[in-house]
Amino acid sequence: MAPLPSSPPSPPWPPSPPSLIEALAARLSRGDARPAADTIRRAAVAIVLHDEPSPRVLLMKRAERASDPWSGHISLPGGGYQASDGDLRVTAIRETREELGVDLDGARLLGSLPPVHPRSSGPRGIEVTPFVFATQAALEPVCGPEALAAFWLPIDLAVSGALDGKHVVPSTQLWFPSWTYQGHVIWGLTRRILDDVLAVGQARAAAR
Image 1 (tube, rainbow, N blue to C red):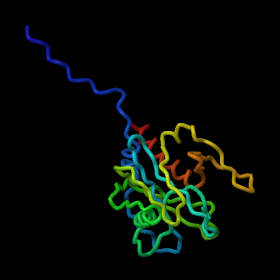
Image 2 (image 1 turned 90 degrees about the vertical axis):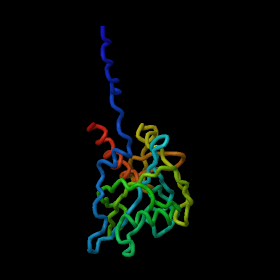
Image 3 (image 1 turned 90 degrees about the horizontal axis):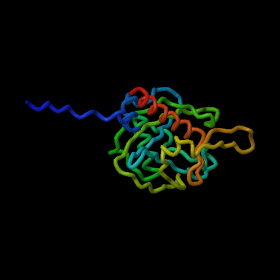
Image 4 (image 1 turned 60 degrees about the horizontal axis):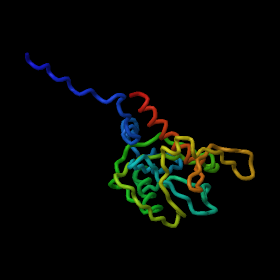
């Protein structure tokens, strides 16, 4: 009697969800990063991700400066667009190099998020475009004069709710959702942008 043919191995079930980096790469825009020829003030920030052994994002503590509306805050590296940049992606790369000594020229660009408009940018306002990069190695930042410190935030820990809190703006009754990690309070524009990133990644995972 001939032996029965062996069955092919069953695929793992449930299927493994895509990593945050791959989920973002599949959904983010990689369109033209050149700003329009108008009078709007623009800036760009870099969301630098590394996923070994788990997803992390690079953040910095800004130097204390009276002219900076985000003085002393925890932020993403970034800053104002200059005409010599040519496009906002270059702005994000240049500012990351200046602030943290991290060169993103060889990093993987996953794409960009829609521009955001900070509430604390003054009467002229400013439009901030976040660009998402992924690095293969955990880069070691070297703080320049605009940064007091830099650190990698574990994204899974933030998403778990273990870091959740409320940040009350001094001398007001206003409060904003925050994360507190190693004494650093992440709130406002930075928390808002990171929430947007996570929403894009989670939407991709849910669609699979």
